[in-house]
Length: 143
Image (cartoon, rainbow, N blue to C red; front, side):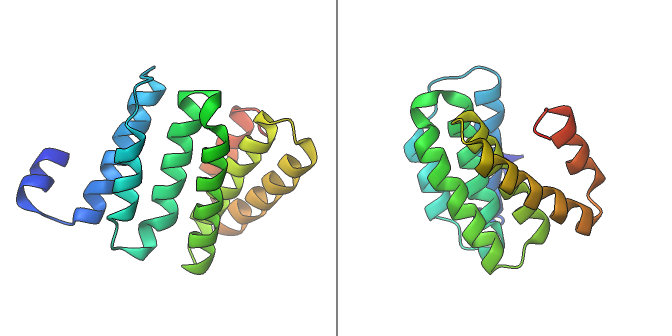
């Protein structure tokens, strides 16, 4: 679908989002040769403000998945996602951002911060009725 959309020049910002999602799938499948410059390029080429936070969170997730050397950069990207989703009123996505930031804090042994962000995520998920997101937090052992 990315190829078809690219060749037809349909919704280029959504195409970039799909490219980031594909990079995450590849990273989760074990790929270690992620093109970080391409990730940055996808984000910088976005022209649809409502996708900013989602794209930044995907980049953070890719970087967290690849290896520990990228955790600091991943944390910067998740902060970018939080700012964007707050500014754009993307409540559910903001909850997902907080959940990921809680994950980053747990990985970096900052338990108090992790609990704070995960609590914010849970509150937002409950407000939005996002049972699937709540279940995911429980299943992954984050809460």
